[in-house]
Image (cartoon, rainbow, N blue to C red; front, top):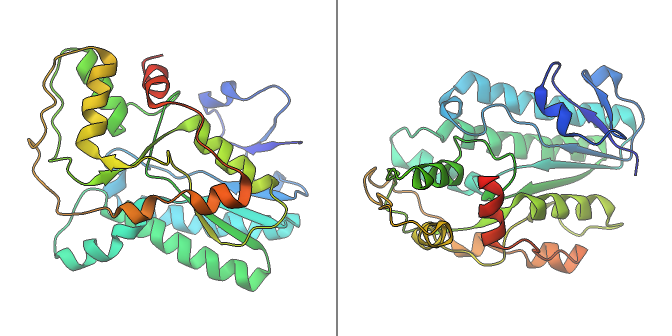
Length: 262
């Protein structure tokens, strides 16, 4: 498969790409393609999630990417969403503001607008959602990377009550799911969840992490209070993806945590 990567100019992460991947820096420089993967999103973690302007621009760029895919003659457009989109009704009903709110609402907006635009353009549309990826190159301000760094330093991380059901998946498995969705000839659905297949309460993931690291540092669960937002275990079903593409998680949680450390 020939791959062209659209990257920011002077982005040091380009050094991670295999040498056979062609690199361009502007959408206008892209040429004919079969499948367009839109995986970019500015400030998907960290304080930038609370910046309404940045997050709104992300939604606009999603639509620009879809229009570019149409110009390139792409048969399929695959974009990365988040399971947090399902929290949008709870956020709007809460009557208060939380840090990730603009990120979540912009992802939701990008999803619905791109879905309708794809109908208009006649492009097969696939929206992928994940909960929390871990492993190599994960940004240090993401929750699990921050927790691992704190525990290894003997510092108790400050956390919420961590009672809600959560799903953590290795980045290699996310990549595998994305690749399969590009390769599969016919897809029945317009949205697929990519996950571990074993969701459980967040505090259990955190306790497992501490055991894997072999440390006794307290986790600090409950120090940040509760944001009142709840996940539903039914959101984390990988069966549609598995049945359509043959997807199955292959990277253990222990290995993914080890890759964070690396």
